[in-house]
Length: 356
Image 1: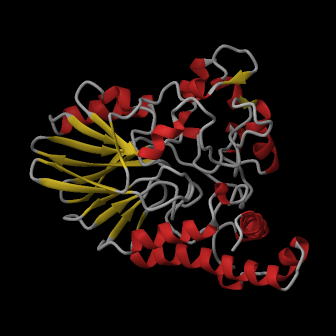
Image 2: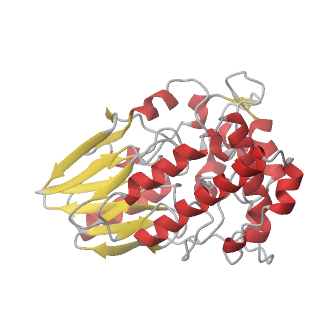
């Protein structure tokens, strides 16, 4: 089944996935994903590299390149060829924004020249136990393995938004025994050489890049990358998720109880990014955004938290919340009709699981 995986890495979403027959769906509420490898100049010697819907970022120096998020083996193979041709310096550092399998694989392409760096949480997610998974793909029977239902329950419940895509399980069950071990899931993921805890600085060719752990949100091992000279910050799957395109005003996918992280932690993570001195937010998804855009994404979570918290205090049931909490100020955001109730339910589950 491994070859199937080679042709479908671009379909892996941070908060879900879409089946191939949904890629060009006519439903206006259905997510549409673009796939075209590209390198886009941001500012100075800073560039974005992506496949149209998933993006990494890299900084070029005289002594080599610092790259964040290699995405997957196929994309990284293409990217290495482009970097060699355009800049003629090797990739010296690869940074993982987090351990999820739609952003981190591909570093093996650069392993002969690069040191791989990640937050210490990545080590825990690669220690052989069931890792933190996106899209409500949790260990439902507590067997430590990825079973088909772990993938298909959220996929079936929210097709195109949560889980993965039909047939994905077979691509990770490499020996065909009906379960996928964490090692099978992470077969293309190279273990980092260096782990950091809270903050780390890299200096290469006279240029400095700062790594920091903003807190837990979509993942529990997240790294944001700050380019102070370029006044640009990069982060994946927080602030802008895989549904975001050119406008950040898009309701979150909100799978499960917000990926199992307290909503207060999400908000704290967004504020950690906002506290930086930056002009450009170039995330793993979506377009290029500014600090005001980042603040709007954080404000949505704060408003969602406040209204659902008050409804809990008032004794409303979940069904009553879905009927009464309209989030009117976000009615013009993408996926409002499709995901308003889903966000309310996610916040309800989150706040009742993680006592506020």
